[in-house]
Amino acid sequence: MPAMASWWPWLIGVAVVIGLVVIASPPLSRRGRDRLDPTEERELDEMFARVDAETDEMASARRLLAMVEQLSARAVPLRAMQPAARSSVGRMVFADSTVLVIAPLTSEPLADGLATTVALTRAVTAGHVVVGSYESDPRGVRVVLQWASGSAGVRVIGFDQPD
Image (tube, rainbow, N blue to C red; front, side, top):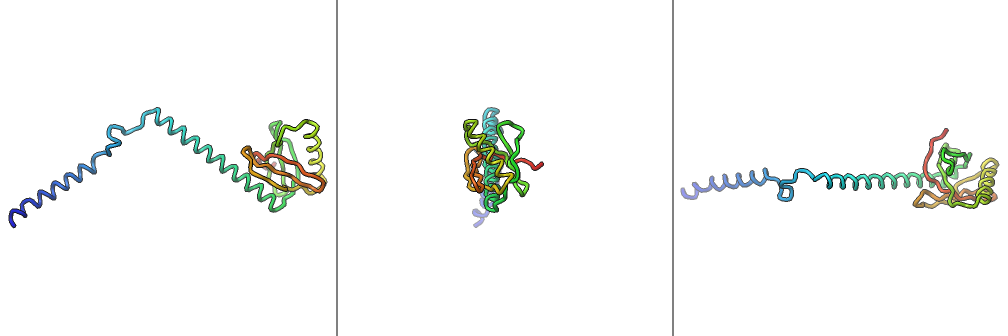
C-alpha cells in the first residue's frame, strides 16, 4: 500500500496541469488568427448589410399589406386623392387619417389613365370609394378601389404622413 500512496498525488498533479494547459490554449482552428483579414471582414459586413436591408424591406412590405387589409376589412372610405412630391406618384387619404403613397399599375395611354383618374376623382367627391380587393406585389400592394359605378387599380408603394 505505501507504493500506491506515493504515485497517487503525482497522477492528480499531472491531470491538473494537463487540464490547465488545455483550458488556457486557444482552439486549433483559431491559433495565429485572432482577427479576420480586412477583405474577409468587409465581405461579412456587406453580407450582413444586405440581410438587414432585405429584412427591413420585408417588414415594411408586411406592414403595408396589413394596413391595406385593415382598410379593406373595415371598409374605410377614401376621402381624397392628392398629388405627391414626385410627379409619378400620388397620395390616397382615407377617413381614418391613413395616408398611402400610390403609383399607377401600368403606363396606360394618357387618355385611358386620365379617364380613370377623372372617374375616380368624381367618385371620391360624390360617394363611397373603398378598397375592394388587393394582393401583394414585388413592387408594393396592388389595390382595386371600388365605388358604385366602377373601379380602378393602383399600386400602393408606401406610407405617408397626414397633413
